Image (cartoon, one colour):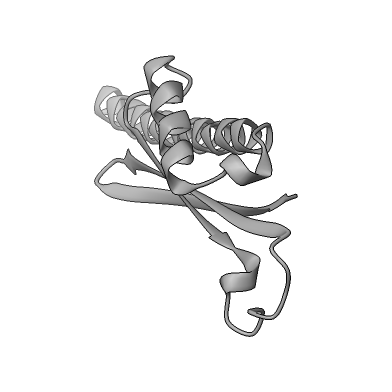
Length: 126
């Protein structure tokens, strides 16, 4: 009888420990994937900010993203997209001069059965 109780206690303890390790693994994996996605966004933004203002358009941005994917700076499993819009083309700002562009970079990746998405916008100045 004491042996059976001891085995039950050990099984419960092992189950709890296994659950804790599994949750720790999921949490760590999620944070690592998020950090990689954030680094992808930063890499794209740095590449675009290094360009001349007049060269910043959707075509050149997509070319930079493709180059970063080829160089493996953006790892497989991460989908990076970007949009750029002139500030003076936004509603209420059409009378302004063309000195600022709004760059939005989005990274999507799978985490389990869900698609996670991180989006960061920044300004490109002339």
